[in-house]
Image (tube, rainbow, N blue to C red; front, side):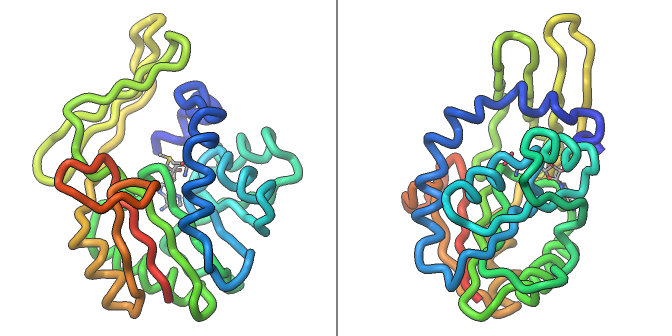
Length: 224
Ligand SMILES: C[S@@+](CC[C@H](N)C(=O)[O-])C[C@H]1O[C@@H](n2cnc3c(N)ncnc32)[C@H](O)[C@@H]1O
């Protein structure tokens, strides 16, 4: 898995200060009205959202499949609550909110697993609980994220709804890692979530703009 190879290098590609300054207030607005403050940051990666949400008053816990990413999160924030686990499995204890941000659902490749995940998340939430999902909506031909000059990230379409993520070290041109991601449509995700009983709203970005064909993100807020 790409994230076992990347570990702390993931954070070298993202300007977290900027991202959180821009996105955290928008995420908090989207979580307004949730039934309580218990929150799981699903597929938390290096856990910046888990930490930021805790600092904003949430009882947050980060879960990620990659033990490397969890180790990075715990090292960065020793008091944070992080745990290795799969987003396809129900939580041991119910939560008020599940967030799944930063295109993590793209690592789920088939609709059967999306259905499994929707069931698991429904079971894992208290009545009225919220799910907040953010995925890439418009498939970019190329996106480069550079922090300093050291790393680049490229998304290139392959066949069907899949695309390839390549992360390379620009200093010596050596490829660090490559993975296949899936671009999920509004219909796919809404159908599976609605089937399980969620009431869903979609947006074209975290700032709650309406979803359009050219929206960069697909944001879904689903209420149990
Ligand atoms: C693009 S990163 C996003 C991380 C973080 N949410 C963010 O916004 O930066 C995707 C994360 O999904 C995790 N992931 C992939 N498949 C997963 C699964 N089945 N269960 C839990 N985490 C998973 C990866 O390990 C990785 O840390």
